[in-house]
Amino acid sequence: WRPSNCTGTQFKQLSPQLRSKLKISWPDVEGGNDTRFWEMEWNKHGTCSEESLNQMQYFQRSFAMWRSHNITEILKNASIVPHPTKTWKYSDIVSPIQTAIKRTPLLRCKRDKAHPNIQ
Image (tube, rainbow, N blue to C red; front, side, top):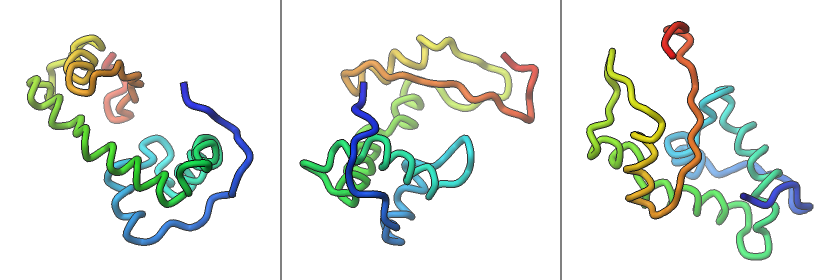
């Protein structure tokens, strides 16, 4: 659970350096508009952190968390890598992440529009 919809400072443009980091660590994988996505995240959740983190610190913290828990590496170490035919159960993916970060992740699947028939 994350606090949401707090009142606080509205989103301000991020520095080019921070934007380039967030494009790697926290992109908008659904809509493709990173800036709009970050603005929505800040306005919905980040404003709730303003007692301890300003907007720049909030996004810097998200980048630091991404760096400290490299999910791609965690999955690779569990032999879970992109494959043209192999699939994994949800629990197969959650388990190594949970072991590494000591928390239970909540994952959402996004269908590949190029392969609509793959479940």
